[in-house]
Image (cartoon, rainbow, N blue to C red; front, side, top):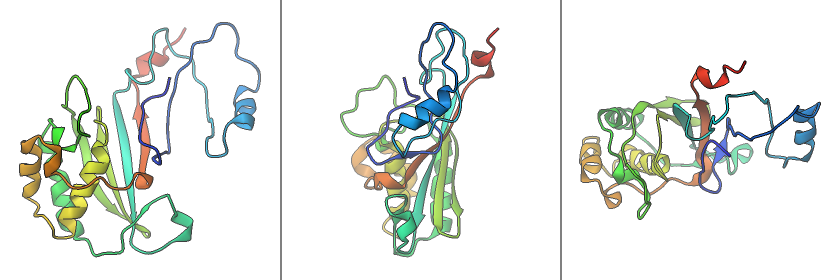
Length: 204
């Protein structure tokens, strides 16, 4: 059972999963599994947890990164969004900060998705400039389906001048996916961190 699901084309710098096993684990388990796993997946560690611990439901928070590149780079093909047009980073930063004021993100959720709540607590949302372009970093206790890509598409719309910073308030309050920007391409998105309570690892 993995820590979550995501769209085809999205990457993970860190992903956790759990499995149930009785008895002793085989020797050299990590080495042996890495020999048979697909070339774009690597297992780093296996940790014992308490019974009934759950990789998805016990997570306290998750963090994502969205990578932009402003120029063609063959080493970043399918690993970032090549966006060769000017973006006002200051406006994008201001719009990202507005996200921290709200908890209902229906406007950034894929239409017709059934979930018990559209409420999320965003802990961080910011734009970081790098030598290759920009990285949007966001952390929250939970995310809705397509939420990060929809937020990124909206930030790009604001950064390109198609929408104003203050429209972010209107978009969120509308609670309607049609008001937000188009979803950014999946290949620029990375799950970067999943945090769990230390108590699930306190195994005697």
